[in-house]
Length: 107
Image (cartoon, rainbow, N blue to C red; front, side, top):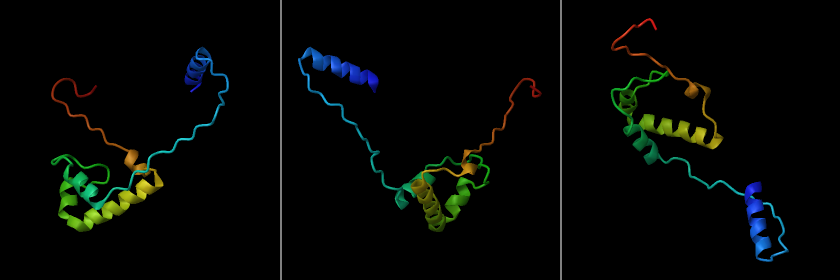
């Protein structure tokens, strides 16, 4: 910010502007509405099939088998997280499983 202030000060001086008051600039994040039921359903449908589930052991097939009941509960969960603006601790965990094709498996 200081760099821009200096740059514009030089421009004002060059054009003879002497009365420039420094004002504080406040910015606000744009309001983004929470995900709709349609958004949640589309996101679940776009999940890749035949992929392993995460630490919760909930697969794509299980979510689809639950139908609108599961979609509704997932939407409630997503909107709660959206409004709190904080991910659950469990969502930061991941499982990495090496898959060996060739070479020494002990490395």
